[in-house]
Length: 311
Ligand code: NDP
Ligand code: OXD
Image (cartoon, rainbow, N blue to C red; front, side, top):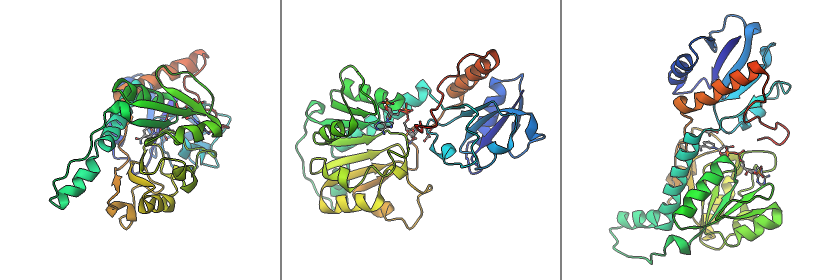
């Protein structure tokens, strides 16, 4: 069985993945795209945002294993071979890294860091009220692997945490909503909204004017999922009108964010270059190994994507 590592051609970490994969699987034949001897020999593709069209050219493919948690770019490839199982990355280290990001950004907003930074530029000494975490309500869109872990971490810190998922669920200490009525109820109480939804036909563009008006005035947004969840003109309008006070954005419809983009210099937007949680070769290759062994022994694969639902 031959394995093919297929990465985004602009990946800055291609070498780390290649070395990690070869060290984790010393007995396998591993090729790295585009240096490929015979496409007909490839049975497993280990991918991170591969160029569109390549997977369709591997006639013996039996497994597509994503090194990313989100598979929206893979599913957007019209030539993706849908008969081949697609599995995504789930990894405790990714959950831990994402929870750190969520805690960092929620605390930043809760303790008014952007406001104090702006005061500093004006040499202004002004102290604002300091509510405790228990007096602040955070709402998490998406209570999957990453959202659930982050919600629990916020709750441990004392925040009141609400969460929204597609189906109803129970998460200890978190008030969970689902459906559009549930979303309304959650938004009406949410002061800091965190997006950790997958990008699907249902979630694309949902961070829009209509959603912002359902939040209390002065609420803030943290988008750590995908740029296409957000309608860019609508966030600019909501910040300008005071409906929202600040947005921390880690992901963008176009990445890297173009130099001339208005987000870069907006005083109420903090821009981060898609760094909320990196997939870590050391820990995530464990999942790859496990799925290879399951494929060989005919056991059910871990973390298989439902390509109809899109996550
Ligand atoms: P999961 O698939 O584990 O969780 C997805 C959650 O979203 C589930 O709770 C699901 O509900 C909910 N959901 C999906 N569709 C809907 C819908 N239409 N309405 C309401 N809820 C919905 O994903 P992960 O937690 O592993 O990852 C989430 C996303 O985070 C990834 O898709 C990726 O885009 C992003 N990400 C960003 C990173 C970064 O560095 N910025 C790093 C890693 C991931 P239910 O539980 O009912 O199925
Ligand atoms: C992912 C990401 O989906 O890094 O894993 O965004």
